[in-house]
Length: 411
Image (cartoon, rainbow, N blue to C red):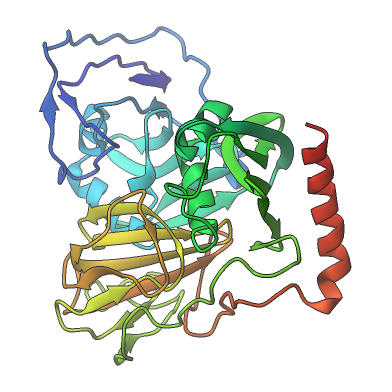
């Protein structure tokens, strides 16, 4: 682990967290094969620290910058810095509206502003394009602010030949597991990737990677793809956040408005300024609450890939599904998950049973829809419909399609 700032503490923790950083100890721990030495050193002069990004760039520099390594837990990091567990849970209470702490992984950084033993501000630094800041607003509360940078997107062509599984061939060519899953979900109605592909089939993918001030962020999106399966070609082109085939026909089935088989009473609406019914504090309510009895089947509202199945002390057991590049849905306070991370799901598929987990006033489902990274009112926002490219957009789509195809032909 790495800690930089006006002081430097080098500490080896005695636990390993297999998958990701667990903020509250709900996941299982495995001891290291041998205990590591604990060392403490204080530098004479401040070391260079990573300056906060976005609208925090001109504020006072952070007191500490912590780089997460495998085995770290949020509670241990707070303890290392002398910040109480009570303050950690105050941050977690604010985090329930964004669930950013659940996405921390080795290599991400935490910036701390600490006055004595009081945490005044915590910034999660995921990459140059994405930071989340928790700022103290009172003796026992924090509010969050998310910084998102569009940056510059640079395209590259990735191509390969299939001589086994598509997954292995795509990974060997340079696609990551998440991108392979996106392609599988996108074309699941067009081809059976296990049965239909043959040795010698080809694939081409135009991938765009994001850069901010020349620094890669690790974010990518699939601009276009083509699979040559014997005598046929399967294509997909991203246009205005949606994917279409060569002729401009939509590849996504229409979304469902409701995540249940029948309509339940809406016990709480989307409200960015809602007063929390338990704490009385103003907290954004980024979703819609349905008064579902415990055990009610919960359905995926669109085709996609499960990216998270996790527990949170306030959100309870929850599931996140990515639907292409533009849409994301969340399902909170569940009693049981019926899917796992990385699984491809279809619209209308049963993914969970509703519950009363986490902190809530009673059994219900909290459902969220995010468009382009922002929560919206799922009951009113426009949702994807299975329509072809409209006449007014046809020229722009054709230009994009032809440009992507030209890149593929050059390979």
